[in-house]
Length: 119
Image (cartoon, rainbow, N blue to C red; front, top):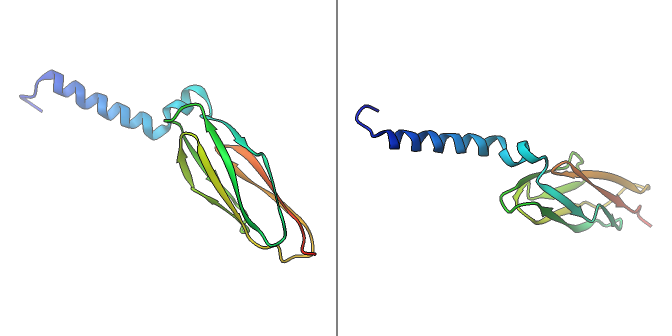
């Protein structure tokens, strides 16, 4: 970068540094999880299944979060989010003769899903 003023070089370094911080989630690294709470922490659905919403409360609008479900009968949307908002849990019909339960993770916070058995 010969011939470029030093001020320009410093700006390039700052932009690269900020991008690196965003990539590793700097606010989480400095202060722990950005998600303050998820409400409700437990959802109860009838055997036919359905949709439930969980409110996500973040400590800052810049905080990001990830959602995860390892259960085939629960789908979580969106997979990632920013700031406070809502996460949708879609629960499939329970075709077994038994009630079932499981949990999903929203930025490390567990939400329990319980579903009745068919009648």
